[in-house]
Image (cartoon, rainbow, N blue to C red; front, side, top):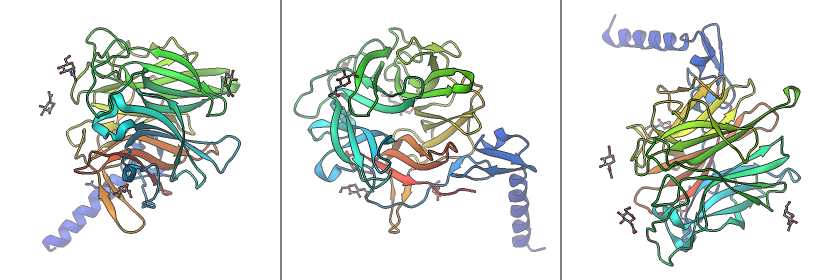
Length: 385
Ligand SMILES: *[C@@H]1O[C@H](CO)[C@@H](O)[C@H](O)[C@H]1NC(C)=O
Ligand SMILES: *[C@@H]1O[C@H](CO)[C@@H](O)[C@H](O)[C@H]1NC(C)=O
Ligand SMILES: *[C@@H]1O[C@H](CO)[C@@H](O)[C@H](O)[C@H]1NC(C)=O
Ligand SMILES: *[C@@H]1O[C@H](CO)[C@@H](O)[C@H](O)[C@H]1NC(C)=O
Ligand SMILES: *[C@@H]1O[C@H](CO)[C@@H](O)[C@H](O)[C@H]1NC(C)=O
């Protein structure tokens, strides 16, 4: 046997072995099922362990990119209008005074934008929901309350007319940039929002999660079991913890709180990460897509920024997928071009609304190399395998 054919044989044996690897659905990242020792992935997910999103090239003109007008934006969430199926709403952080991503605090305010061209957009701004400083908007539907809930961070803060750092606080946990403390608003029509104030403040001490931010809420509902729970994934950090941010989950019977903890305020996994986006799949398993802060990711350069974690129950145990990267900093477009982004964070999925929870689109906040500007990019997801 030549050395080359021996290598080929070895490689195919290894591939063969890896596709025959699973014995449990956990080894398929709970994004598929283990059948005859191999993973059958749910639509949208791919790779031997179903841990990777099947991202496809989309149009360059998509999402919310106002950088040509000198306007930067970040966090995003897409909701289909309940009454007009052709209308999609985007809730997004936009920075006033032409400030770039570095000045997200205190220049961020929360905007509602609309698309009549489907979930990919592009979206047009329609309304300011909250003035500066307001950031991290995440909108969910609460079956129990028959209302939409918008979770965010921030508190009213007037801003200088030029982009500069401002020291301020929105409560315990952080005295420098106001990012600690999670608030909630509710609405029946996505347009008229009622404020309920800060429902989940930070801590005055230096605990790992003193600075509570990045709300990733989920409303879990079972009418047959009269079961309702509002679950809140969030990121903690003693201020300026510099890449050691961690994630955990709190829960409440009612969205205004009080929120209680699963493992008395300890992280659900040890891997540094932030921006948790949570969902429950069609089998009732729980998933998180996060912005990884591991050494091959972090705030800039990446490339392995998108990681997936899963659990059969929201209160754990959670597994952070160290093997397979869910998405990275490279985006290919349908005109054959591609961009290697400097930062790609704030993952958010749009699912099919047939109960299958098939991921159809991934939206992220992106920043290009050597640019202070940022925008929201939406990428289609294929069938997977
Ligand atoms: C977003 O807009 C900027 C400025 O016009 C442009 O350079 C960039 O290529 C756009 N992004 C995409 C994905 O087209
Ligand atoms: C904010 O406060 C920190 C110390 O708490 C200080 O180092 C920094 O210079 C202050 N920044 C501004 C813009 O005042
Ligand atoms: C907004 O909602 C509040 C509370 O539901 C209601 O009292 C108010 O009339 C609404 N305003 C508009 C303009 O619809
Ligand atoms: C943050 O951590 C990085 C990598 O560990 C280190 O290079 C950098 O100096 C740290 N920055 C601060 C402000 O501590
Ligand atoms: C990033 O992801 C794309 C699409 O999944 C893949 O083709 C590419 O090889 C990845 N790049 C790196 C540096 O891993």
